[in-house]
Image (cartoon, rainbow, N blue to C red; front, side, top):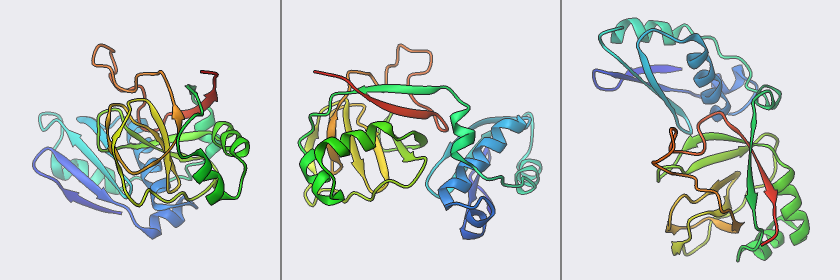
Length: 217
């Protein structure tokens, strides 16, 4: 891993293939492992951690620690395998889904499954909230075992309704608000993914385990 200064109150850690090998997984697995380790160690002065696909941003209070001290502490963290078994120890957030999306047939054709099998595979999979995306409350969810690789739409939609449950690449996600997007839509949920009146506005946070539960409309 490569720990770099990011302003005067944050450090950003770039992870690479060597880190992926250390956790016997992907670079993203290494990011999630590092994020878990940083949170578990409760390092003095750490204010927040923000995982991404290949990096981890760590912000800190300069009154409690320094750039140099925190960099040394982060550089000394050993990565441990981030497994599905570890994630399953946590509570599972269940998100109800009405599987009536306009792209169900297209996803079924791409995966060579029936529509019923697509819904079953998506709903039976345990997902991990890996990192936040382009809008508040949007989280990239990764399957805890390999599932599929779904192409994005050739022409993104200009308006995707809030609550749309979607897939793209290996990921699944729920659109927290109406927005443009190119992911394939499997259905919708009545759950609010972002609500500023909640103590934690985002329904999800990095590391959460998620399962989609089919409900009738």
